[in-house]
Amino acid sequence: MEFNARSEVIYWRGPSPFHFLRVGEVNAAEIRASAASVTYGWGMIPVAAEIDDLEFSTSLFAKDGDYFLPLRVAVRRALSLEVGDEVEVAFDLTPPQH
Image: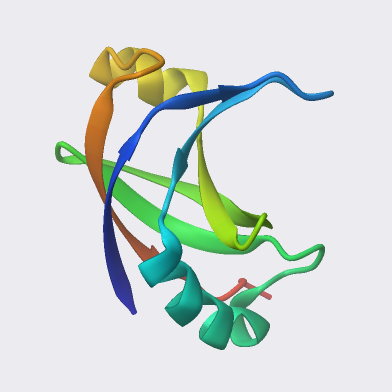
């Protein structure tokens, strides 16, 4: 199932600081409907994502009724992304590999 989102890069300063994209409420409802079949635990949902022709894998996590897509340092550096930049991301839910 393919999803698209336009989102701003945000920084979360929690116990493990990281940068994220919020996938949006419209996508969140559809993701929730499929989550049980693809999650690998703790609500983490593996995805194959693409921003500007750069493909990478990561896992969505749920928070406050939405889902957040983490942006690793390598991805942000390759795309020169900073907090506040708005980007278009495409992603597919990928079932866990056993």
